[in-house]
Image (tube, rainbow, N blue to C red; front, side, top):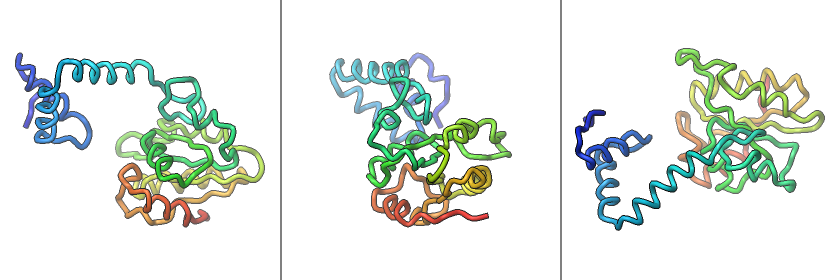
Length: 203
């Protein structure tokens, strides 16, 4: 198990920092570290610059709260998108996954999490107030595309109770995505089926 205190060994420090990335274990971190070390100095310089640049220049879209390098992301700024359809997701990476599947031509709203009282995540910690403020009046569809987990289910039902009185149609992705699965790791075909076969939420 890697420890935070890696002494003055730069390779061990690199392995440790890489291992802190989600889904990266010690073996993968070691393989990545040695891959970086085998490249020329320009590779590591460009990699470091890309990471620093992304962190320094990327913020949240003022409308949907996905990551962007401007006030408004390209999707929100695209006038050809369907304004009467808003797809709610947990994370910015979910926007990328659904866009990559090519199954949604509407807008998005990123909650930045899911309801989880045990972890101290309630409605105030999510972008729910901002969501309610942007739901258009009249005929519109709100697609709840949160993960099929305990937290995701609780979030979906909570949102449905808030949104349905506003007159919007509320749907949720069909169970093409397995229970406990993650949207960002689902393939295009699975996401496509889940989006196309979404069901209206009741109650």
